[in-house]
Image 1 (cartoon, each protein chain N blue to C red):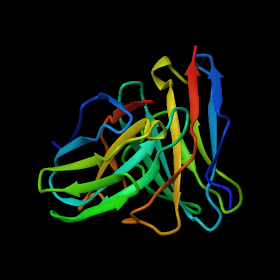
Image 2: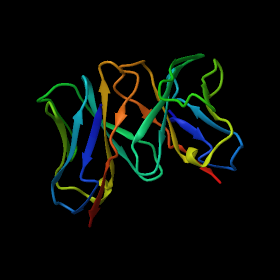
Image 3: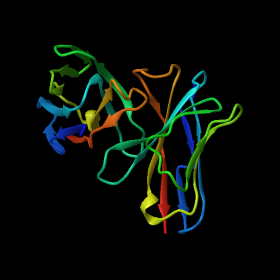
Image 4: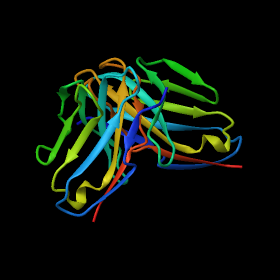
Length: 115
Length: 111
């Protein structure tokens, strides 16, 4: 049973470009969470999705960021017109049950670098 | 304001030298406290969940405890493979959709 798969592992973008981060949850998991980890800071919640629905996006910046989890395919975190401050590690986690599920399974993350 | 503070930021131990990591929290209402381990270049790996003061959980050389204000992760006779960053996170009663993480304790165990 493969774990949570994130790709790419590393992504380099120039300011103003778009970044698309992908996350395939563990088999049988229909709940996906995105977290961001800035240098010297803790993991920060961004968004929680179930299949085809955004449940909680309270941690997501209002502009330039969007997330989806379509019926078929991986969850996508999209960042438009990236800026240097978007440089961070982005982690996806999945769980078989919704909150307050106690156990999240995390992927290895995507390291986004904005030049 | 909800806050999770972990100490120390970094800890170096000799192999076999037991110690404890601290996670203190100030939150409006705690539903659960979580411990994760994170290796370099990897995502966090779940270790424990604690729900009520006085609760304890053990796994191999690790034991987690919880009081009304803090949690401790005790490491008994650590080995080099225990080297990692240990993260504490809280789940709030009013915001159970997400975990609120501390900045972690980076543990290095020297052979």
